[in-house]
Image 1 (cartoon, rainbow, N blue to C red):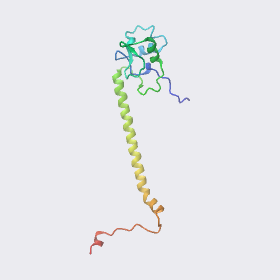
Image 2 (tube, one colour):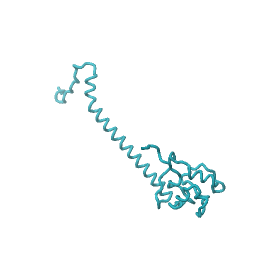
Image 3 (spheres, rainbow, N blue to C red):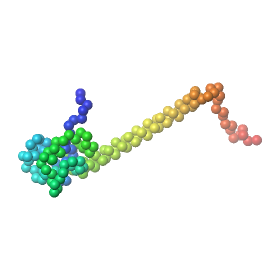
Length: 155
């Protein structure tokens, strides 16, 4: 069993766009092959981009060069922090909203777990503290003096 991350490319990501629109699965399959882009009938392939602006390729007058596009499409994106698995029928904006919602949910879960761990630790310390003070306190024979009740204090 391998614990390595599998190869991911922009053709697997929901943020791959042509003119700010979703690329459909047939287009993604076509562009993921080595020579698919050269044989493509799709329009505006030179206006393909990453919706999250994670590409390093240079755009000249709003379009991208063929070699740069091929490199960007096939580059390994295992470490891209914005990579989000493509789901059919979702626009890039909807993919971003879903990604943001999932990140918020994970943050809320971490905060809840941190609060639970803090409460558990506080309860444990509160229970053990008197025993620890009695054991590690200086004079083991001394006891904590009890406070007199209000009736006993009055003259």
